[in-house]
Image 1 (cartoon, one colour):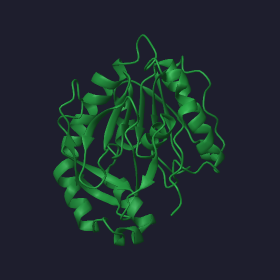
Image 2 (tube, one colour):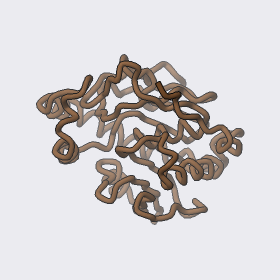
Image 3 (tube, rainbow, N blue to C red):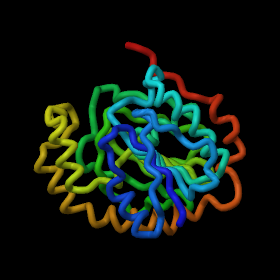
Length: 253
């Protein structure tokens, strides 16, 4: 049975709907949490794909050894040609590795709750059916050089991108479940008072309206699109240089 490597950033984190879909499709999950000292593999020959999830830390936290280790490790994924999916922090880490900056919104706005996105008319854009998705973040990323922007938004303009054949980054959380929303809010309810955050009822109403569409999209994307892309070669001819292109932190203000 093929494995998918799942990288999480807290001991209590879970892969949510992404993990459920992969397991139902016959994949086993190799879940690793570098934040608690679990090492990442130095070869991906036994893995069909890599999913790097979100977390409360920043892609700019170079002082955290596990963040530094992931930034150094992602070029290995790109060079191997293994499909990479970065979600929220996982997308921001990919963007930094590819030379782009990760930074807060200039007005300190957040996206917390269901937010509209606009898929772009890019060839073979697998996000074309997505219109509203779940978000929980205060930082966004520049579009890396050589990447294709797949979706935009009104507050954070870079919502999803593709780099090479098989590396994707999404600012939003397609893995979210109702139980996960409740758990996240119960841990940090004060964040719903921050600029740009939505009240609890809006989260639940958004889930009722949009969760089915996101799940249908996710099932198609993961198995029919994304996991079929890693057969053959590395993600792009520049992948070997990715480690040397690391984006810098935004300047202090």
